[in-house]
Amino acid sequence: MIDFLIVGGGIAGLSAGARLSEHGSVTVLEAEDVLGYHASGRSAALFEESYGPSSVVALNKAGAQYLRSENGGYLTPRGLMLVGANHQSEVFEADCADLNMQRLSVDQALSRVPILNTDIVGFAAISEGAFDIDTDRLLQDFARVIRRNGGAVLTKCEVTRIQKAAHWTVEAGQVFEASHLINAAGAWADEIAALAGVPPIGITPRRRSMARIPAPGGHDVSTWPMMLGTGETWYAKPDAGKLLVSPSEADPVTPHDAFADDMVLAEGLARYEELMTEQVTRVESNWAGLRSFAPDGTLVLGPDPAEPSFVWSAGQGGYGFQTAPAASQLLADLVTGNQPQIDQRFISLLTPERLNR
Image 1: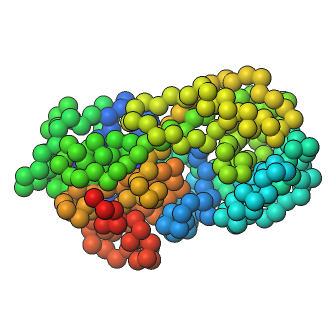
Image 2 (image 1 turned 90 degrees about the horizontal axis):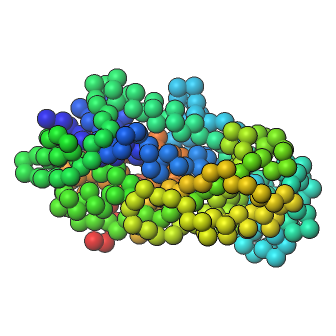
Image 3 (image 1 turned 45 degrees about the horizontal axis):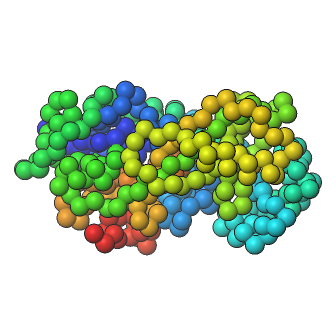
């Protein structure tokens, strides 16, 4: 009998498994051939404490020290620069306040990103507290903790049947029996709930596309900040000598192995190009990921009120990596009855009880 059986081998499932492995036996089931194949493997991989709704910011702050120092730290300075066109002053002001950014003159912004089109760009601001996250190492380190504590992390284990009697019986190529079932299935979280006979929470998978382009104009982009268009209508981030550009779309879709929509990608690249002097001449590759949202846009963590042995770790909504250290600890505290370190007013915004089902 397994104490904690976890469905989903992305950042939500692995971080939860690492925390719970301190309290009992853990097995993680991942349907794909590799861990982190879907949303976790297609993340923008940025940590910014002020990014997200209040409950997410609380998790960001609570987990920041873990990301900075655990196992030598997972963060590398990047910076996040907000860029707005001359006609976007109102949206720029709102974004600047939400992200607690410091204003830059256009000339100061140009010194950081020399391809900005100063005929169009009218506003800029910077957050120096934005960092790249070593997402692959974070995933693997959480998996390593599970194994070190005697747990198992299994791939190619697609869940096909779930039953509940005295305990959970789960079929996924083989039969697993567990006291607690943790639903960390990302875009498929409601489908897993339905298999388990638990009411869904209204998870909506939303596609986000990405293009990798050559370094614009042959520039060394390694020290450039990540750039964010006002209203989050696009973003661009240096990556291994190239530039990743996203339309920042959030189009609702059904759960699937996501791929980029060519028209949406083209529109996003055009919005990026409008503010730059270097145009996109070639897309080297493109892909998409599914970010999963609860109806109120924030994470769902903890036991289901109707079936406490069924535990939600869902609705990460693009905040999965930056919230993982604190979200997984909160989930473990809620499951084991330990006193959470997060303020109760934020816990009430994160637990399943808040959702009307």
